[in-house]
Image (cartoon, one colour):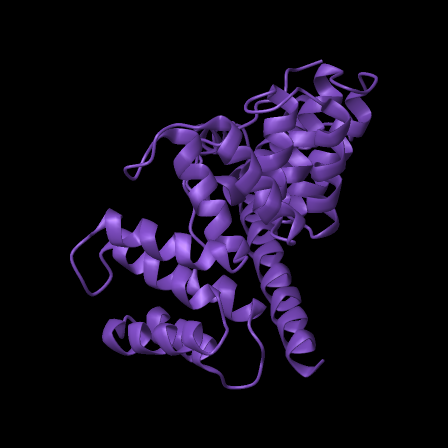
Length: 288
């Protein structure tokens, strides 16, 4: 079987919660945190900073996290990692899952003026996970899987990946697929791995999309279909995945003009369908 090409790495990516992602998590009523996120998304940095400060002072602990990320990224101010870490620590003391996750990554990597400390990173990342942050669940699972900062426990890794999957966090599907593909903490099962990567692709994950493109190109699992393969490669390429771009061009040279047009229309239709589903989900959440 073709070896799965997974594009994630253990705790390698420094990711920030975007204003758009966080607005969906915020209370639908007008409040300082939500207004601050809207201001940040509109690059109204002074207004965002005031609102985040108000949010933190009134008990919305993530206000300090977003002030910290503004200091770290230099949004409306000079970059200042010392200030950022101090704000993250203030939020983490009040159990901000976002701040705990950021500090955990900084300690794992030995960055931001913090010494590398796997044990402390584990405590922060897994506490963030237990507070419900999906990306921290994946980080915590990776630590249990590799034994960095704690005793290796692949069963615990599986548990945290499953929790993140329940929240539809796409990289959890990819990491669990890797475990099934390699037979880690479970019997090797290529079909199960394929099913998980297919679910990841439905969530727009580039590793999942690339895998589905390869499967369609080679005929593994669901039969050979170059048009379908092109569609998946096109979707992953649009997300900046270079191997998918090369694969898309490879299939473009093999398809007729009519088949190529059909494949491109399929990618457009897929994108519109997912956008409509996301908008419906957001509207439903806002009405609850």
